[in-house]
Image (cartoon, rainbow, N blue to C red; front, side, top):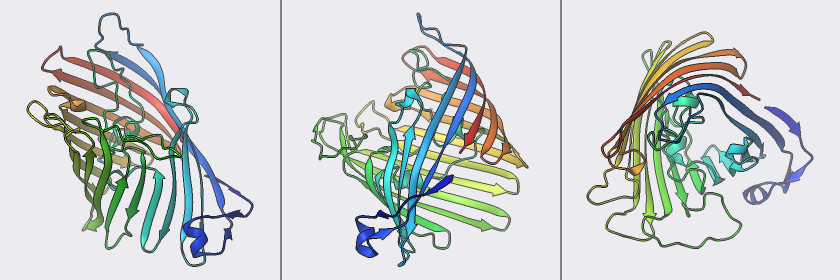
Length: 360
């Protein structure tokens, strides 16, 4: 990131109480461009034609800065802006302040919670396509392929970027834990005033998160293991709705240039009662790295996708990433999605994706 030295500014809140009223802060500017050319062949509904070859992309701008005070307290802020018009250009993606020291770190504002921040990601062909969070999708959500147009990822983020308070402990002997509290899980955009409750059945208000992660080395094997749990309190109530509960476990092993990992997660999507089964997601991934090249593959299997009973999706992805410079990579992959539906016709799709990522 390019750094620009700002004039002396006032740091409010905790920083002001713990140190002199003013400190110098370095402003960091950065971001990324992720652009792909996608050739797609998928099942379509009558009257819907999917563009066979198209450009898909995701672009963001980061703005932030931090300072470390004489007493060791680090105070900073981070903002991410969507740049692409389809994502809502200049719409804040993240906006939060943070405080850290040898006691850990606190995030305050619109940021992912501890369950996501400590979640273990499996190896992937291209993390933008088949990673823990899907940034671009080569498929369109049509009447036949109902869930593949949406993000088929396994990020444990039931409150996404809603305003929250998160504590992350320091790493001790490879272990780290985290806690998060989201007071209003319906107010994704944030607000300058207190919101009102809808009290509708299935509406989730407060959400609590707890997560743990371990990173270590045994003999010649690198180990990353983690688990997370979230509980969202339902405002209303009915025979078919309930508090929202999600949990996940993950394991990643690295042996020399090889990596293999598995993740499993469950989400009840705030549903209960007969015919409202939990959504379960299994992800298995592997990769091999040689110099600037990485070859990867992944398998994704989700039951009752999107909280709809009887919609099961499998995704197979293989690809290669080549780092042609610092923060720059070419990426190519092939992906096949197969959707089985117990009530309507099955559907599938195949995509060839070639693109680049540039971090700046």
